[in-house]
Image (tube, rainbow, N blue to C red):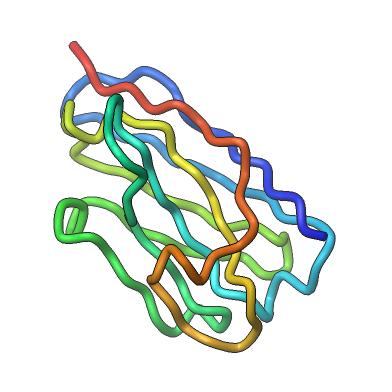
Length: 125
């Protein structure tokens, strides 16, 4: 059983930056793809970005491509999401997730079985 704990959310002005972190425990972190998904107010949860187990492959939603950067530190069992040039439409609860299977690269939400509790990001002036 894996546990995922997100941190780093908060209130930021448009154009600002935040860095989200997600620490995993309970499974061999380095063998699983990790991802960030978000749920805007009143909307369904949506894909933001994922990174393969090796870190070689990264995927981004069109809405964040060029502004967000996903990375991982397998020695620290941590995945990050650097968010720059934030916009009000980035306001959401951001969730960290881990792939259910090892050694693959995925950006399909259905492939992610373990989820954190979420961290709120609010972009507002």
